[in-house]
Length: 199
Image 1 (cartoon, rainbow, N blue to C red):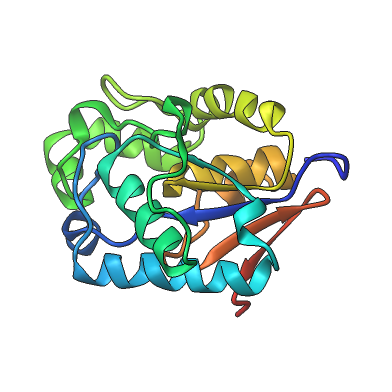
Image 2: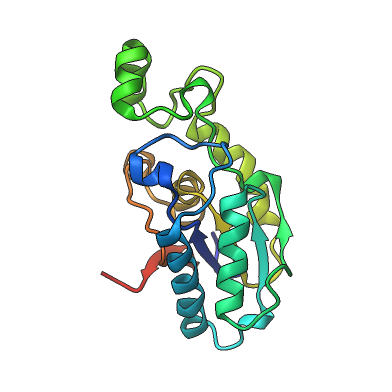
């Protein structure tokens, strides 16, 4: 992301039961759990400290239920209208195709060759009926090009990893293994990224 582009405040959706169980969600529509709702509110309160006028920010949100609920709760914590945001299909999570709903141990058992393929090249491997990170980048890069002012993106872990490469120049093999936190804010500004709170 160049210095001329707006600042992006990225919020990953709060935790779901499938997150807690280590299941691949992809584009399955799994709701937030109780901890996830708390994390969404925490992200909203944090955003208030990061941007002095949060009502001036645009909001783009993945259309999946867990991201919409995260956006509503974060905006409510800011004292903003809960539903005043735009949905963007391009911000959906990386799809894992037929692996969705499985844990990694289950994938390794049911599709050992595919699991080994993804472990060898996480960026380029395409799960059966799914996407890889290169495909995801092609899907979300135009979102950044469309931004006209500082924006909150509420989306998913895979999308954040792709943004780390597109917007902050992270090396692909590093970005795909980055932890993407819930209840925090990942800030993209002037071609760099940082987590808030730090540490």
